[in-house]
Length: 448
Image (cartoon, rainbow, N blue to C red; front, side, top):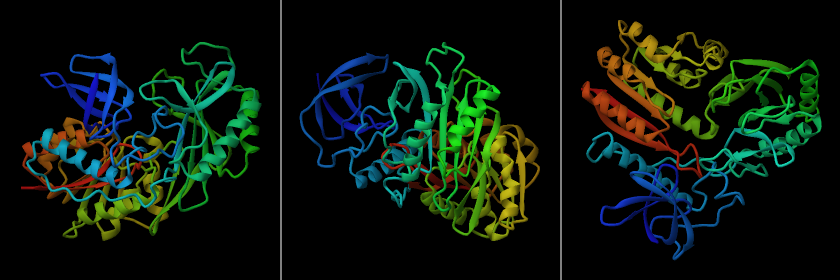
């Protein structure tokens, strides 16, 4: 059939509507204003996925993707769209979510803040590893909605140092005798490597490597892995993480040092932070600095004496929140991150941060008896647990600064908070992830 593309969804797929009832088609690789001959490849109750057979016309905003794996690799979905158009799209995506899901009429949204670097901005690469088709180590990124691997060549959005070292690490691992896991979980005893995670600090020289394994290694295997990574050179340190679970989460609870330091340092403005390979830390350090400065400015308006920060990670934004002299209670559940909140506060000479290691939904009622002038939220893509938004209503904080990486769950939580008397003031999107459809947002709500 012929499909006229009218929009783009949160995955970067073109949206078309067909038939009298406007049945929705999701079509990868096409842009608004384009028409294409398409074939439906799967159909659900409310939508269908289609494949492009031929584009009939090109949008004036279309460009040639930089990466040869574009369209196969699931990491980027917007390389074919000009960068100014990506920024406009992300603003419109946020606006649509706030109106449709949040129920906010004509929300005030500032222009999307462009990333200082459009390419080579990522300070982290998480690379799945398999053994397949005669290869002991097949590593790369997953195809869209698949666990099939597109082999790693050169990632256009990863830091140049990450690309260089990844090639060396893969070469060394192939010589080590260790093998990647099989997709079906079957295989011999040597098939053990699940992921490679490489992190390169943008503002320091530190670089960490973690190899995630499906089981504990034997002494001989550990020696082979250590020698393989040590031969690469240029790494601050390396660890082996054990994750025997069957789920998609990359990290297990136990990490064993292989050599060097198990932590790395990054600088954001005047602050320095230490964290592990498995700790949460934003992947675009340059843009993170801009976002943290802005979020702290909103939270610190009126010089609040007490701030509650939920989902605090390693305490990186916490330092910016404490810059005005406020007492900050920082809550984080993921222990590999939470353990560094106090350490990072001490590293920067800050004495007004109180770390709490707990899930926000578990600790929020215990904190309800305290009065906080401002609350700062930076939850995962799933947003806040409903218990968190409900309890925040009883706290009566003067303002809430909500940092989100998912416009849909942000809008849902804003609607919940509005039911408890909080008023949406404005939102500013930040392009933390150029070439993808993801958008980071800082939103201000006040207690009316």
